[in-house]
Length: 518
Image (cartoon, rainbow, N blue to C red; front, side, top):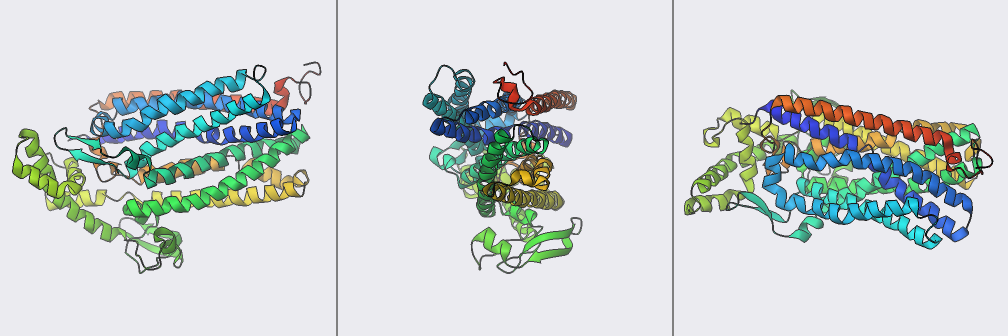
């Protein structure tokens, strides 16, 4: 059996590096399309201020992209170093989209980023705009393939277990690509990135307007960011509903935990705004609920029920018991691949194999599992409810707050009065961290809510780790956190430095805080 501390440290290390990395990713996804919009206006109008806007915000984009790449490289290596059995077990499926991302999207993105920065004097306006557009396409393709891989972890379609190779094997590549969970996750995640980019430009532009600096430059940037941000945050909310629906279809345990729904309620279930959660007693002491809303959103129906945690646990207990036979049959086939009876049992119980493997956390021989062990494995199938419940509500609350801000900002640009509302500009400045907090909480909901699975319903997390020493994990965790913290400090320093300089950093002689002859 794998030591629990080893599993926890491996999870903590991957979570730390992934969440550091995702501080950079959303801004990259969002700013690149803002650059496309700004440069498109420049090409259509010939007004040089739009070129300056593209170059200035592009400089901040480039800083963020470089540091984002640096933090992302180690993530894929961790699959081999910290999650070796996971890589062996599902590498044929999980590795395919990651390989495509590296060969197609990342190289496309990196190539055109170089042309974006060094091609201003070597390409025509239209050619450079095409470069910027392809850079944006590459960035989004990169996110697409990574999220296809992650979506498969949430809903493992297009693959099945082979007792001959003792691994998961891909049976339908296009089912993996068009996995509903992956597609919903992609559009929701990239839309959240667009909101992040829009909020960054809106907040920095608001600061310029509050200071009365480069007003025409800032007004245009504010206008573009408010319109793009409003469209993006509406997209996040609408597509978040779709993402929630796919979760309800494929991961009912996660849905029940998100809603702190201990008992199955009559359809359509209500939406809990807040609740006093008692995890020890597995009940809510009190709750404030909007009738019907959760049932309608989660099932697209007024008659379908959303199962509660207690019913899900009872069903999972049956699957764990059934999975004992599957694991025993698999171990028999490992000893003798020609064992026809074991093959017959495995075929009959294949769907519950992963649930039987949950018992490996408590006993090496699942056939010797006691009722207490089965109960513990059953309780493991539901993540802690309070972190899921409150993370989701804070994320949604921030989303609606940003909707209000972008709506007001866009309305003020229609009236050409954004500078006359300093309270709105200050609010935009204070809301700068909001999209990052919401994005990080979104990943907490998605990844923590999948526990105890690495591959949902297929491979438990405690079986996925490499055989490492606890000491080495402490050392590498400290090293990664220290290095990534340095990179984050560098990012903040550089972004703050160039943002404070403003468009004067371009050295055109048209803006404040630069030599007039520059």
